[in-house]
Length: 180
Image 1 (cartoon, rainbow, N blue to C red):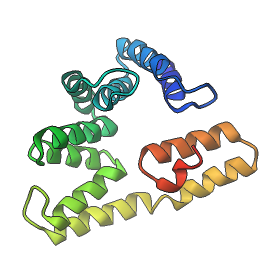
Image 2: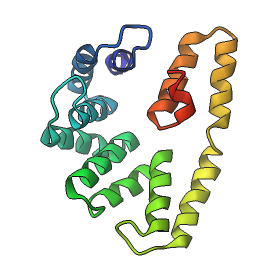
Image 3: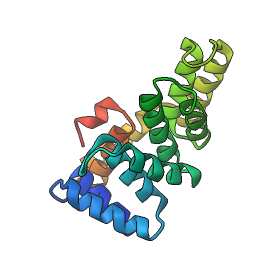
């Protein structure tokens, strides 16, 4: 897991100069040790072409391995890949549901949106409300986490503050992106 964390630090420039090649190398070593999060990280890199060339076949293989190990990030990223490749939600939606069940908040939001707007399935406002209710009950928004990051920063705990903001930014919290 330490190798994955080191890769994450290089990928996001946390305490080190950002270096996608070094990030990939550390993720690869972590994956050799069967670290699930490393499969997701490598799959994402191949999916978007960061630190390597785009390779959807390799991205799918790695993200599928992460998703099969109940990695919510991996399931979410694999859903995004399938949605891009297929131009529909047939393979993506079950993965979004899996990621949502694993507590990945962006997946809960995506599931709610799909039900509310009828994306890849009939409109179902009740299902949308259930997903949004679970999102709010589970996470209560990210305000508490943002406050924690600010408090860490004020206490001069810059490393932990930056890590929290980067994790929130990676999950799509826009206000955290300017602090990562």
